[in-house]
Length: 284
Image: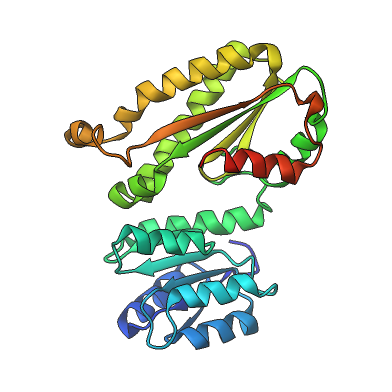
């Protein structure tokens, strides 16, 4: 462990749960601060500047969503990773937390080892400056922006955007460990397919946790896209447990992959933010 301990802020109204989490994470060599009220959580975040916050949604005063909203809208706390800890099982409630910028959520009763891994991954992401995704190990953040800046406006280079759809519903049903396994499997599938069609210098990274960006020769774009679409479509059912596959095939929120091709970049904008926004909006 590093000489400087990572600081965790726990905002949990159940004293027993708060005490258990405090004792556990201190035993894991973290510095822990625990409060029971939402307003205290906001104040504590400003005072102690934690490296990560674990927020319960159901609090006595303001709820965890409001705590997260305030943290995200204050420049001093905007980048603190947030993990929601909640009894709420409704999909809309969970998605609300993710839309507020939460990094993860865990539903009670929770597996403490799973929570430990989610905390570790979130802190690793921060310590690496969001340069690589903690699940797949692929580039993200500044490394992706740097690559896009290098290729935008060039002839003979194209982008392929891949969005894994309905990951939220899959995560709700099977948990974070299973969803991470899906992301690792998909990333490996993309890497192996790229090796068949592309050059060693071609690029694969993340635009978000469930969105991938490929930089490839324009001459290979169509064949690569077709092969990846076929392989991903054929693989989806195998991400589900055998007992659930037949039912999953009928669900509207079944896992899927959307691929969007962006042809020659020569006539495209050289504004990285604009290109990223265009790609992200294409999944809707």
